[in-house]
Length: 300
Image (tube, rainbow, N blue to C red; front, top):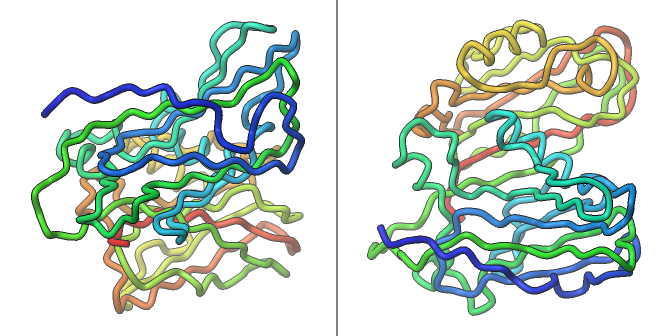
């Protein structure tokens, strides 16, 4: 394998020092490229820097103007940390000199097998149906960037494009809102294509605590009303890093079911014709919205 290039990109188009909250910026990675990761770098420049997860809102990745990966900065960090706290966003230094980094991983360095990790690199090339614009990443600000600040991107990639006509399979992140009213809710909008890696329920505005999950596909019950604390214990034992158990605060509002918890990507669940179905249960009658982040490997 040829060495990867580590490229410092200029400021993201549309976002500069002084950009206001709700500003939208866009960056492009032109073909040919085999992208391992994109690192967002934030410098606040103030004595009390704003956290990058509070500065960046939605991050959306597009292929030919069609989104294939969408999550907020906080949701991205949540997904990354499922694989170990070492993959969380980083802060270097303090005060005006502090630098913060948040990474969009395409390859998955936490995989036990290098071949599994490398197979997820994003191949941006006409042979995979990409147009001349290549990868487009759109970033929306939650908070203004001060006049002393800067948001830039770093791209880690190589030019090793496989000589194959096979359509690439890579991770897709779909975000869905689930409206809750009562002690349980059916989750019926799980896609039926690709392979399911995980269901992550996070950042809901519900009034109750997520208690348990039921998940069925192919007429088989894969998760049978498993309590949140029991799922956390199981995933921890498998080497996955779910959020710490708590009955109060933000952690009580999250639940992760990792399908390929045995590590190989091949362990993900094929969704085609599987009629996947889930039920989320709460400790008390609840109302509000649960956000589901689905991790799926598929062609696109």
